[in-house]
Image (spheres, rainbow, N blue to C red):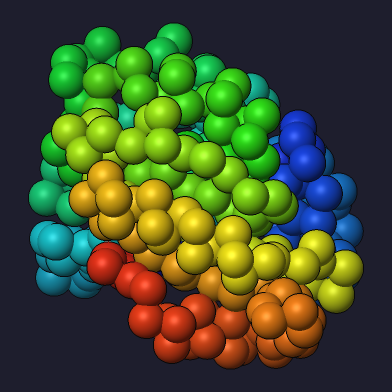
Length: 246
């Protein structure tokens, strides 16, 4: 799945941002500009690129992961977003997915022709703690969307999602731990509890990433970065495959 990052950089707004992989990876690469300095990238019009034969470089049916090194609803990107909506309209033959910690901003930022939602856009609302679920999910459920995902990542505590798990409104729940040397451990019992909640409500579930430290059976396991997705998959909890989040 191609990553489409029309801008790069962000600023931290909640507990889930503490060890954000974007800041960590920028530091590891020695990026000269500060990560909280938001700037357009050379990939701004990525889905519109064409081959020498004037065909789309990314063919019909391509799934794009949008703004995975930033936040699509970031305030600093307000002046650029209208052009991104236009690109999404032009490439209505492709699908675009973004997740956000700023879901409260989305109603005011939707394009004029949004209606009940674009068929080719999926939106994920991130909830890393119970209080963020209580603050964000009521707003999320009121927004007209064709495809809606609850992203519990990085999961920092046990979370009760049952008040918002309606199979007519939620397409999937995806859960993951935090990666990086200083990551906070993910308790596997929290994952199992969310899995149970989703089964009871008939909501598709995905355990997409263990994180660096997984607490299971009173023992903390250290899991290398390259195994965190595959080890989560081996748990056998998934009823749907979610886009990988680094």
